[in-house]
Image 1 (cartoon, rainbow, N blue to C red):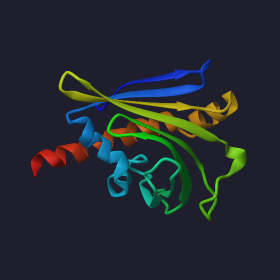
Image 2 (cartoon, rainbow, N blue to C red):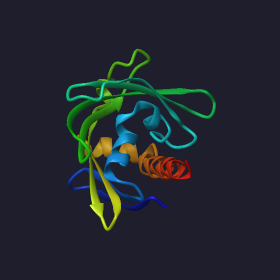
Image 3 (cartoon, rainbow, N blue to C red):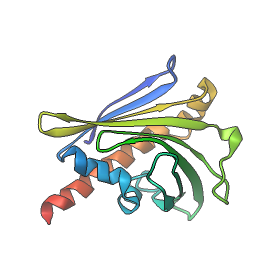
Length: 165
């Protein structure tokens, strides 16, 4: 399994995942930078993502939607705040309406992703910081932890395909 730990800190309002991959940081970075690769894992297997826009630059905006098993769509957005290839990415993430605009009452989540070399593997740490305990609980009820665990599990498959080429 890709994810080695998942930690919820209700005091700090964070959900942190640590995952290890058999690939270089540069290769793992690409699963974030390339929208076609991002689509292959952003979202659990039953809710795949489609990125309509992915401006991967500081201040850039990304718009995507996830498609559920019955064809329902769940739109979302990112605004990238920091990019330090291939080590650190920070972005604000949230739910969107049918036009791709943020839904203010849903709030947003600050995401920080870091990559580091650990004994010939790449360790990816992602930390999501919520705006309030209520938002954190709402995301937990929606299955965010399980969904992210399943989503990150798909990265291994992508990296294994690289090895088979």
